[in-house]
Amino acid sequence: MTYFILFFFGLAVGSFLNVVSLRYEPGRKLLDLKIIGGRSRCPHCRETLKWYELIPLLSFIIQKGRCRNCGKRLSLQYPLVEFLSGLIFVFVPFVSVNSLQFIIYNQFLQFLVIGSWLLIFILFLLLSIIDFHHYIIPDLINLVLGSLGIILIALNQKIGNFGFITGSFLGHYAAIFGFRESIWLNHFFAAFLGMAFFGLVIILTRGRAMGWGDFKLVGALGLIFGWPDIIMIIALSFIIGSIFVAPLLIKGRKNMKDAVPFGPFMIMASVLVFFIGFQMIDSYFKLFGIIR
Ligand SMILES: [Zn+2]
Image (cartoon, rainbow, N blue to C red):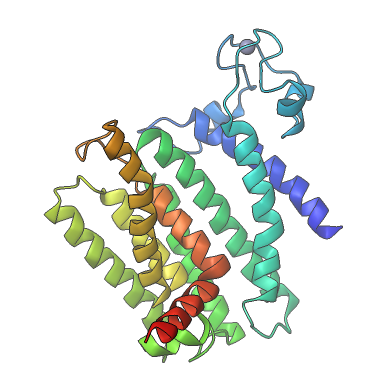
């Protein structure tokens, strides 16, 4: 029942994310109240939408993805983002509570940890949409993500969710990579290492593969996920990136000079590490063992 309510709350947040991301323009403030505050209109005929045309998911399904006034197709982004946001509100609290393995005796701290992760995932979604449309990651999003990373460091230290086999999404495999004496040192080292690596790539490729927005994002992700999780995120983002870019290159629709937003790949990698990081590294090591 709780998850049912969370799902619907997530749908509503998703519909807000659609508004923020679709009205965003580079160079403009992300949360400009004058822009966000106005009534929603059809992007084709500018007709103001009625309340029953603004129900998340349902309106889109009932109207078969078309505007009631002009009949033109509406972007699939609307239901997709609403649905993803709904899933975030169901699965992020679920995973935070059940698989982070920390002993929760303080309900308030538990609430703060789950809330921080929810905010992080909502910002992940917003960042991906904006980077996808505009090839830009707003500084404000990176800044808030980094701050949430620092808040999580403090919370996890208080809870005691950091040690040789705790505090990493890679479980006990994290111990192999060391650096587990201090959570502060660990997470700041991860941020520094990620930024040093991305900085080098940006300078060597003259910014063709990624930009300084990605550089700031990897720093924020380092603060949030720590070491060695950040290595897995970086490696996965390059793998996911090449899977998406290879078909475009073969079809000749993009060449290396065209920008491909790298942010969404890093977000996908982070989401994978959060949900199945341990399972991925576990099966990798087991496969490695069998081959040897
Ligand atoms: Zn219309």
